[in-house]
Image 1: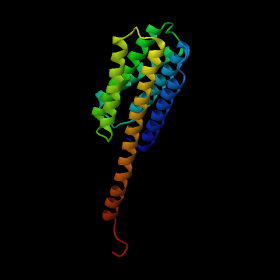
Image 2: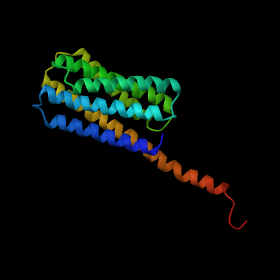
Image 3: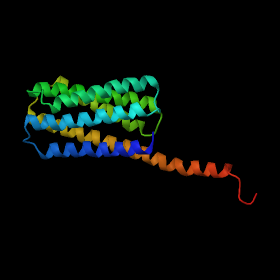
Image 4: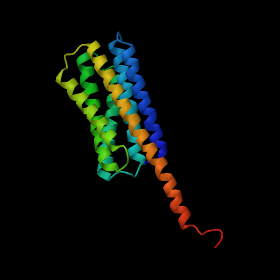
Length: 193
């Protein structure tokens, strides 16, 4: 995966973490605000992953196609949250849970096909998203304040996982670059020859 994507992934992680912190700082948020925050997160995550998979050749075709399908669905679910179709808390919980479930599955499938660094963190990201989705689906009767707390915690964890994935990828790029340059120097003719 190229360095530009890792920087974009780092920014997405920071964005997700900031959204989680905003949700923590705004415990009296209305259903509309909560739907907007979580919808924005799902939309940006889905669109960025779709772009990565569409323009990247570092994944097997099956993983790319499945990841693109899941990511487009995550973006659509984000749009549903932003449009405030979820007029009730239970509907919002189900929509967000489906978005997190698809997001987590996409990340897990992508980590198995990439062969790159940070796959442990990517699998961790996927598992956190899937487990959070299952928890929301199992307990759909939680109140808005409990959902905001749970959702903010989940967003913070997801943001931290994304940040660690990006940093691991950036570190691997920086450690393999000098070795690549040294190998190129060894094959180049010396100026004294």
